[in-house]
Image (cartoon, rainbow, N blue to C red; front, side):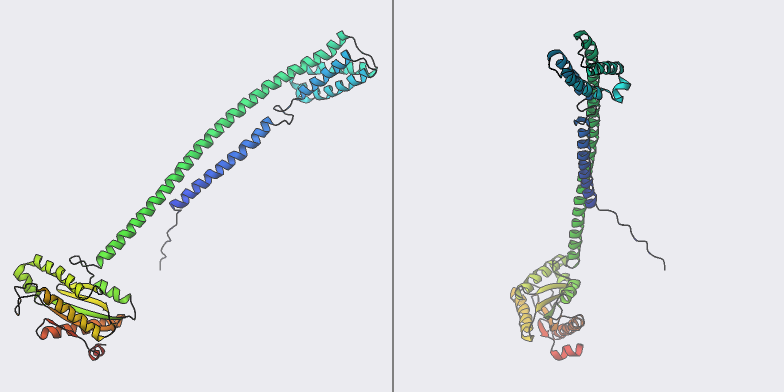
Length: 374
């Protein structure tokens, strides 16, 4: 036996919508995690191109040493100036400055010579100081300016990259948001279509259980209603219009249809609105009502017959009278599939006995008759 291929399940519109909004939130989280580290890398004071420059601190140390040599006259002037020069020298003597700035190596040589001279407690003349210190200070200033230019370039590039990245993120977020709305709209649309289809199916099911002419239930509805109340004691009435064919022949089918609708209203009123009515086809009706004994069923049959008699509906084709009459057969039963079939047969037999005895009356199947039917 060949296997029926299983239908692959695809994500519904609701799940697609939720996935879209989840991706959007992840994208926003990624953007936050991406921007903060980059800002820290570009603008933190960590000693790189964008931080506090080594050249700036080196220049300050050399300027302090120059101030000490020109303005102080204490016994330890040379040693204090020598200490400041040593700090400035160490910050200038790095690979980046040696490789990229031509003034670095000559400046370091001058600082070496000045450092050795001060080591012998000899204070050079102002002219020599201007050569040994001012030239390295000018070199450091040149390095600072170049580093500031580089910092500006790095900042500009970072701003441009950030703007481009944020534009892409914004565009992507907008597209994902629109997709989420679209998927959500499709979910709502499909949900409404399903609801509409369900309501339409229920409407057609209800119509399938209704007689289109009179609006009451049909034979299928009677069967379903009995099975919906298992074990309940019910009474079943089968009602037939006497000489309905002659009525149609005399007055026409439109008047016959009006008579059917009028009789439904009369039967419902006679039963106090407590019974469910059904049209079994043609001129035959059925009524299903709660019934706790034969007396209740007999009272219902008598009420229906008397109500129609009091209405005195003209029947020009009636061979035995001038007005519309009914024939009824009734039975009490317990709502079960097998019992209903037997009850229907017993009520139908009671109805035909009424017809055989001249119509315009009712009869209830006895317990013996019902047992015999079972």
